[in-house]
Amino acid sequence: MNPVKVGLLGLGTVGSGTANVLARNAGEISRRAGRGIIVTHAASRSLRSSINDTSGIKFTTDPQDVVDDPEISVVCELMGGYEPARALVLRAIANGKHVVTANKALIARHGNEIFALAREKGVMVAFEAAVGGGIPIIKAIREGLAGNRIEWLAGIINGTGNFILTEMRDKGRDFADVLAEAQALGYAEADPTFDVEGIDAAHKLTILASIAFGIPLQFDKVYTEGISRITREDVAYAEQLGYRIKHLGLARATPAGIELRVHPTLIPERRLIANVDGVMNAVLVKGDAVGPTLYYGAGAGAEPTGSAVVADLVDVVRTLTTDPNNRVPHLAFQPDALSSQPVLPVDEIVTAYYLRLRAADKPGVLADVTRIFAEAGISIESILQKEPPAGSPDATVIILTQRVRERQMNGAIARIEALDSITGAVTRIRLEHLNSN
Ligand SMILES: NC(=O)C1=CN([C@@H]2O[C@H](COP(=O)(O)OP(=O)(O)OC[C@H]3O[C@@H](n4cnc5c(N)ncnc54)[C@H](O)[C@@H]3O)[C@@H](O)[C@H]2O)C=CC1
Ligand SMILES: N[C@@H](CC=O)C(=O)O
Ligand code: NA
Image 1 (tube, rainbow, N blue to C red):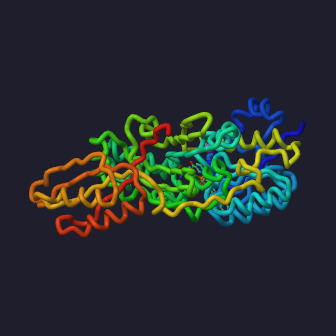
Image 2 (image 1 turned 180 degrees about the horizontal axis):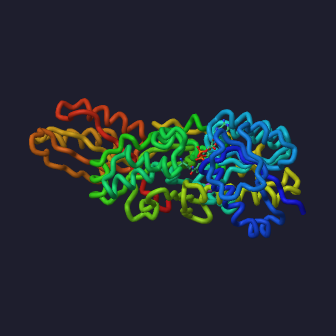
Image 3 (image 1 turned 180 degrees about the vertical axis):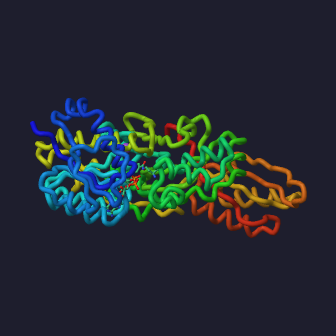
């Protein structure tokens, strides 16, 4: 059988990694797919790339040439960004081509529209590389856990952010310096504020939540907080109390609705996920039948991400002849069976907290604080008081609380900040035990 011809849009980190994996493992890949898969066309703004073997590839600076080329069966969108990626993907689908993409921003924001057109045209849109880089997490949830009701999932799903936090903690390196290294290694997004401010993780959480719970993609409803305000001080206090601070995406089904949130989180250091460092990602998924499961691997980088893109290409080729109505649905659940469960506003979420406050070093202050918590119905798990450093009148107080609704905590924090004996704002970091419940 003739090989399947693929056109690449984008020849950067992921485009080059994909082309190199496809070429190096061509024999294995065609034994698995039943046909060869070859790159015949590639488009990029700059024609510089790290592709090892460019023979047989027709290059262009205009991506439209690729999506309109009748020879190509599958378009790999590896450019990034919302536009022109959206317009190009829609056009490729309209032209009857299957699409593989690593672009989580595109899927999270425009996936509902893209999948609808793909269904109409009977083509596939595959996006394994969009979440967790090389970890086959989409396949695991969509297919491997299809017998379960997913209760919750929590993941370290941004490689750049985890790399920055790890280097800062282990080597005391400067934030800006580590970010520059992540960019040089090809981990970061074109706009690295997407990594640092949690937007990239929110894109990925949007996708994970849809395939876990069978809800439409709803990026705008994810509560999103980045890592830029995490201080060394909080990292050190958390460690003294037996916790690590990780940037976590968390999705949980509750009777009232779905919690969707991305924020720095204290996790007990004995949990495997608390020890996922550097560019590695991990996703914990709790199914009602299987219990907790953990998926770990490189979350970014050329060949790990290329590995996921190539796996999608193999999937597309294997199912080319399948009746489109019998293929694995894009969002795991049949499109007419998506649910309208609401996504909860952040003040309705339930979580435990790490709080850091600066308090006058005099009797009665702690009693005032604990009275406010008692009146708000918030149970304190532990309190750590640090003497004021030389020259400062204020002591630092660290409080860990039990789980409580965020709205109750907001009220308590406002009352604590209004006390004369408390200086400045209370620092809050959410805390999750991530045990098997
Ligand atoms: N870098 C990584 O480790 C990972 C990246 N991704 C995603 O993969 C996609 C690509 O990322 P990278 O390879 O890192 O980006 P990159 O910046 O290294 O490469 C982007 C490529 O697309 C081309 N391009 C961009 N806009 C274009 C336009 N309008 N016309 C023509 N060519 C254009 C650029 O010239 C370049 O060749 C993004 O959606 C990213 O979020 C997903 C997982 C991991
Ligand atoms: N910028 C992203 C790339 C992979 O999705 C990350 O750092 O995780
Ligand atoms: Na993946």
